[in-house]
Amino acid sequence: MAAYVVRACAPKDLPDIMRLVKDIAVIYKLPLNKIRTNVEELKEAGFGKRPRFECFVAEVPPHQKTKEGHTLIGYVLSVYTYNIWKGRNLYIDNMYVMPEYRGRRIGKMLLNTAVTAAWQNGCTQIRMHSSSEKPENIKFLEFHGGEDLSVKEGWNLFRFQESELLSLAAQSKF
Picture 1 (spheres, rainbow, N blue to C red):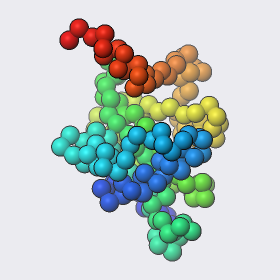
Picture 2 (cartoon, one colour; picture 1 turned 180 degrees about the horizontal axis):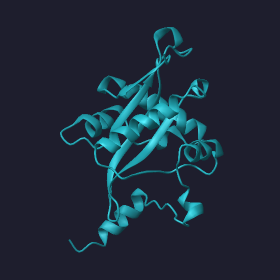
Picture 3 (cartoon, helix red, strand yellow; picture 1 turned 60 degrees about the vertical axis):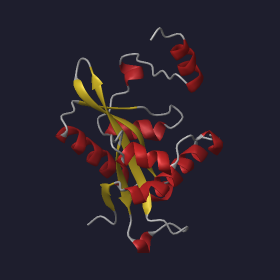
Picture 4 (cartoon, rainbow, N blue to C red; picture 1 turned 90 degrees about the horizontal axis):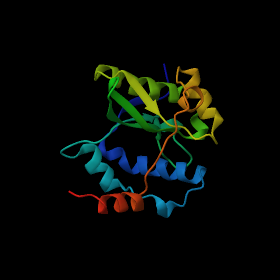
């Protein structure tokens, strides 16, 4: 029997999700003051009138808690999207397991749980991005059947930041 459980995220888990988001920011050397999301925004986005994301968490029993006393040690957060060729898809925005808990198949269980939910909700594809600076993440995704579209098909991921959104919206004729 696994020494952890993967379950649906609950509102009470959101402070821990934010803790893990900050851990990720430190790993990627992103300034913490650049994180716009907070617990209240997550609560509204995930558990409000129109939930915007789905999240599963990995939790260890109290006797395996972190040295800081935490039992929530990983999560996968995703959103449903639509692809004109394939129909409903799941986009995994983030999947993270604290480094000291890796190698225990927790990431695989988080991925499997998100995939199962996606399949049950009629999805035909899972999409996810991964930093080229984290080859171990790419290897994990490829090992579990993911295709690197930037290598295989030449697809590039683009992002429009807030300033570009404002500029484009200002040009709109609506």
